[in-house]
Length: 458
Image (tube, rainbow, N blue to C red):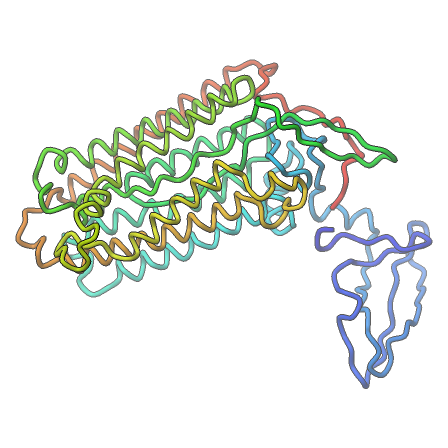
């Protein structure tokens, strides 16, 4: 039951379901439980006194002057999986769905209600403010912005703040319509692509592939039985690529690569990779109903390739230092690099496995499903990556001071600007194709619910 919804009592009486049965106990106070009269008796005062005196458990009931039917409009209704179109299904998630025609206000209100998206929203909304705080603290340091050596770090922090905010918005507003859902995740993919250009490891936008289901029940109670069919829906966002081309090019390159061809082309190639990442991930939404396997392969590859490319400097340094202990000199890796790569492996595992909800459909609808764990690993990976970049920046500063800077502020801003413009054009092209598609397209079908007014209110 969502907070603020009325609970029905015998005889048609109602109370607000806000507090537990033993919320208050006071030895000197006697509380009276005030009940709300059923419809038709509003205006009459009826009071009942329960066993609430002298230390007995007290049930605090809030007296209000509105009818229960008005209170039920405060928070949106929640639906079962059989009551929403297939495009909204999540693998192993049976309940807690929002209406697929929610208004923007309903979407915002749902973030304060326990749905299957609530934890997804907050696990990226709160980290947005954390990374913004880190950006402001670092940028406000004495002489930090005046030193060109620090500029790649500042550029690195901008996508760090952008990607969790874009993911939060995608999860919040994805239930307005099927078309709005796709557009929300197009924008999320674009933010992830920029994040792979300027930042590390990540979480996800929309969770899980969908399985075809069989629905049935007795006594008016529906249940969903997920069949292990090969035709899986692959509408999950791809795992966030733990890459950060700008800071790696500035602070983390192996000594033997400095000023070589790969070093010179590292950031421009990463920008082209971001176009490939956005294009493939956006396109992967179109065949997800007819060819879910192809859709999942495209989306996974779209982000796996930038991850491998961006982390080439780390893999090379790791190979040089393997078994050499502390004798690596400038090639030594911070332990935070290891934590970051571990979080990247965990995000990939959670994306591919959808555990634990795949083992027990319906048990982890609200708390504990893989996409929530995915977000947590993403944020932790981003935090460890930031600490690792700071460690490389500080430990290698004296050595890098003897080298020519690989990319100045003008080149950095120009590359980032071109990457932003290119990704926006790709998103605009896919969005335009959605608006040109006929309403009968399966990708856009999210019309009237079969459950209609029988939707279960949580």
